[in-house]
Image 1 (tube, rainbow, N blue to C red):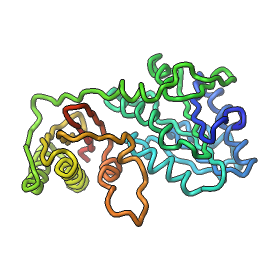
Image 2 (tube, helix red, strand yellow):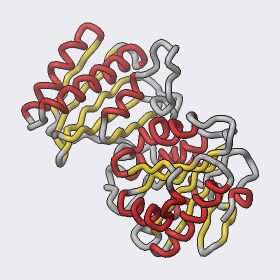
Image 3 (tube, rainbow, N blue to C red):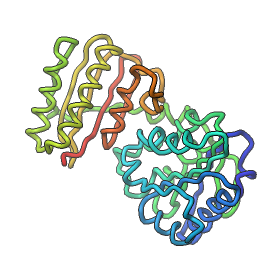
Image 4 (cartoon, helix red, strand yellow):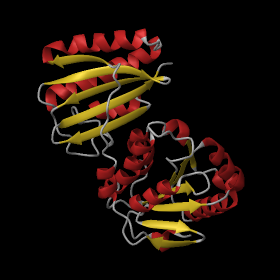
Length: 311
């Protein structure tokens, strides 16, 4: 599998459908070795166990490679583009860049999965025209058939059984629309209606509710910043007011804002911001601090939901 075989446009985004560890290691090491031999920067962001498999197989050949544990760096799929993919590609301009990114694995939950698919669809917009190849592996043994079908929808090229082909179902915009899911809140969620004058009270409300549900002081600091950004965003862009809800879900505290605004840019919060730019960092900060972010938007408004581990 060579880059040239996959590249027609500057940016290439193939999915690798693999069926066992042998195939995985063979395809990964070949992709990496070709890049290293060509003097191209290479990054590998996959779950920890698979990271060890590939790294051990490469030996000293893998020394120039940037190795990233995707289970940590990509815990929230919404921060993979700015903090993993763009961070590496932007640090190596003027040369073709290779990245392996595996954001979907068998341990992903049903709550996380829609955000993972949206991330895969948005990669195509985020890197359009860039001289970058991002290869995304999918484990056909462990992932459900509909997950593999979604991979065909988010990747223009699919590799499997040793050959690559153009995906006949590639349609990332349709995938984004299909996973723009309603986000019903549980009956027990505590609610607070806010406007510009009540922003401090909204933060106090969220902190009190999260503390009562067992959130540690360290994570309360993250939650305070997230709620400040979400509620301010509602006031500035969502019609001047909104509703904040807080509840516990498994080992996480969930904070949600609903307002009448429209989030027209699907990459909002996923683009790195230039150091000289004033503003534009609110949703980026939300993604950075949250363990998961879910969004829903329609003609009635926008829902933004942040999940933060209690400890």
